[in-house]
Length: 128
Image: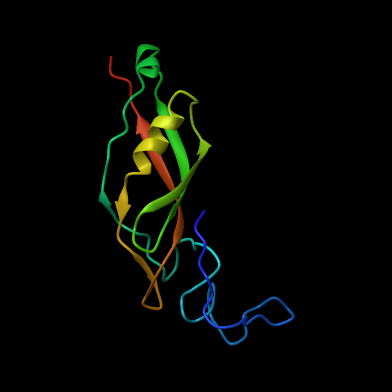
């Protein structure tokens, strides 16, 4: 699992909010974990794609469908963690193996590259 260290000391107040900082992890863009894209934080763009290998058993059974994954992308654009949210059991591992090889542009918060947590969809279409 990806861990980021907060620079300096804790800036937490007793009420659980960051003192004098906007957004996750403070104004310097560091935090204790990945952030979700949205608002002013642009989603990373995929720069390297590896197609999933359709499992033979799924192909023989004409199983198709969508696998939805939650992925953590580190500040350099590598997928460092991925887990299945939903999908067919015959397709899940192939989707994970593929997505773990994808690469993305860095996402920046206040000009600093940050880790991102995002949802990825992989589709498997059986050919007849």
